Length: 304
Image 1 (cartoon, rainbow, N blue to C red):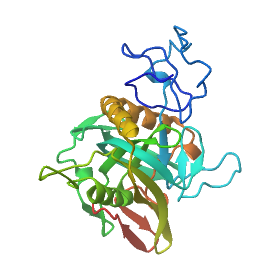
Image 2 (image 1 turned 30 degrees about the horizontal axis):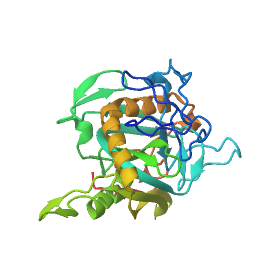
Image 3 (image 1 turned 90 degrees about the vertical axis):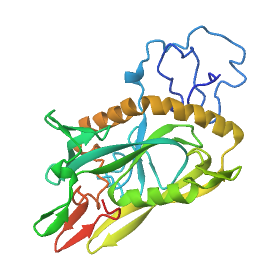
């Protein structure tokens, strides 16, 4: 039985114990214990030692430079790769909960087939470089446009780290939008949420979790370089039960957003090269706001 006032997590995955978390099994889309454990109080779920360090949250990655371990075939850029289950999907049907902005300077090393974070800031005030050195984001030279080999380049850009719940499985996940993917994301926010609700003559925002959002991917091309960008579609309002639960989930993940993002990115950085790239650039060709390909320059769509 699901504990009231607790957020949805991965199917068959227990919520890490806190002082406010009772011993209960978390339900998924359908409760496997329905009719079996109804009314029974076990006193423990056997997972009493679970902490936040044990709980993983999936990251849905596109433009992923990796290999399907089952087929040994390259993973296509226009699919969502799940870093937890290693499954691939063409579309996502989500109830979005909340998002957090961060800054990131990441470069892709073609020889090592891996991306490296040169500097990152979760509060967009102070950045931490790969050697542990800190520096202020305001006035940082890597956050400013400059010309390199007669091409405009800006190393650092804004990342929107979005937390959502898969509507079918109730699995929590993170999906990150930056560079060429951030403009479609902003357009979706402005089209359906920002200032679109009018109550008593006052213009307000719809909650991010008011609608079911479908996300698919389409390929774009510039010369010889191609990459996937997200396509957003609103599938209508959620149910009363869904919005009530989503509101609780959103509050939970606002509080735990930073640890969740840091943990997901740390696990990504520690993974083998074939499974580690969060490179959302032009099919892995560079990881700046301008993608360099032989004989041409592909500007980032978001203008950052």
